[in-house]
Amino acid sequence: MNNILTLNNIIFSYEVDQPEVKNAVEDVSFTVTEGEWIAIVGHNGSGKSTIARIINGLLFPQSGDVTVFGKLMNEDNLWSIRTELGMVFQNPDNQFVGATVQDDVAFALENNGVPYEDMVARVHQSLAQVKMEQFLNHEPQHLSGGQKQRVAIAGALALRPKLLILDEATSMLDPQGRQEVLDIVRKLRDDTGLTVLSITHDLEEAILADRILFMNQGRKFAEGQPSEIFALGDELVELGLDLPFSMKMAKMLQEKGIQLDGTHMSDEELVENLWISNFKK
Amino acid sequence: MMEKMIFGRFIPGDSFVHKMDPRAKLVFVFAFILVVFIANNIPTYIALVVVTFFVIALSRIRLYFLINGLKPVMILMVFTFLIHVFFTKGGTVLIDWGIFNIQEEGVKQGIFISIRFLVLVFMTSILTLTTSPISITDGLETLLNPLKKIKVPVHELALMMSIALRFIPTLMDETDKIMKAQMARGSDVTSGTIKERLKAVVPLLIPLFVSAFKRAEDLATAMEVRGYRGGEGRTRYRQLKWSMRDTYALLLLVLFAVGLYYFRTTK
Image (cartoon, rainbow over all chains, first blue to last red; front, side, top):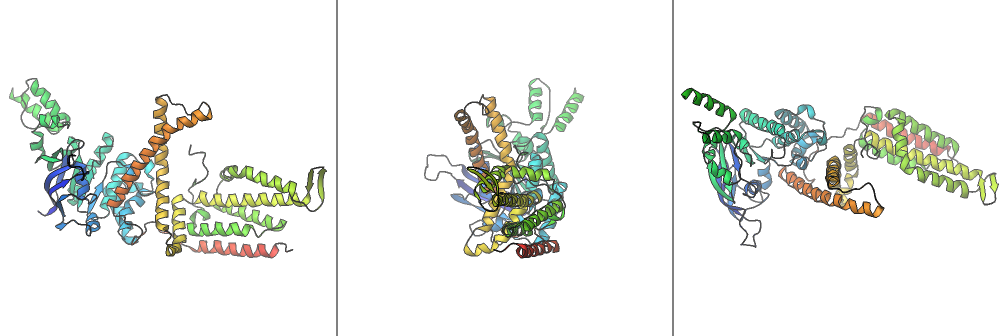
């Protein structure tokens, strides 16, 4: 497995000249390997979005270093690194640059001087990947939030990045739009082996990941597979995260004296366990 | 709010005029504005009107939209017409009531100037009605490209314009939302004295500006992440295609100008 991204002892503060202000990111290190889906979770102010900005070179850490594809990030290779990192932000409206869907998808290609014929092919291909090809000439105001985010994903994919970063990309969407976006990301990963880093405070989204990094107050609080992280249970709730419905349900059932084994990260899993527990009686 | 605006309104279609290259259309309209001033007698003005209506017919735009575009300049038209009628002297006296002295030349000049206005407004309206704002921006960018040599930031201006155009509907929606939110809190923009109304606009504008700045910052970040580094080394996705029809249109305009020049009265 190749390391796509390595963060080493990152320390970052927005107020360098005020030492009494706590650092936004305090000594965080982690590695992302090729093909995995990693989720960084944490409530507001946990430093997770700051990390996204550091990965992309929008912010430079005061200490520690970022290595992307084996290259140590610095001012000189920043732009070439950015072409390999696709990023989707929170607000669907505020990242739509083009006048129409296809113009927006082409934006990153134009910036990187891709020749016209190549551009047309790539725009169509990326839009097909997110199932938006029939919206080629639509204007952003005629799209739903979920559709806009899918266009944003296509815009990021057009450059054929190795890593897709979703910075709270689903937090402003309605449940349907959120599902659309997550389905697309999951499908992309299955089809192309894209590496995904999603930053979220939604644990239902984090469940989809292979590995979860749990941030609290700028520090890495826990790291592990979703089942390991969710085993923390009440600790997650105390740190301001909302457990998925199935887990809350299981907990309440257990309090009522119903015996349930294992973790219940999805509704199906809970239903399955309920069946089994019924048999055991 | 949007429905009433004729300026910048684009009506999609596939007529001859719609299919023209935006550069050709821009050059045509600017050249036509100059050509209009060649006309100075009845036959040449008739020719101008005929050509204008020919272009309207070619564009297949309904006259209604053009008349709508005329409204804002109507007062100016009537005003200049009256000025000419009353103050341009010459020819036979038509009406003589003391200070109300109207002469033939005045009426003639008044009508000529009004036609000039009409023709100009129609032509520019056809330009904006048949060309999407983004194509106009593209056209202007390529036409003004030589100005880059004297350090005019042509690309940046064009990008600013296209982003501004893209955000008009977004900010309109936002204004609407803020207006409703403030109305729900009892603010009333529609009644009261002018002073009261102006005061009621402030709670609309402040949230709108705050959010516009927030949007601008987000957009700048998104653009940077997607590799925007200014116009240097950039390719273009929207390609402009110059076809024979554009050349013909401009050639016809030149012929027309020569014809007008031939038939104008020389003193």
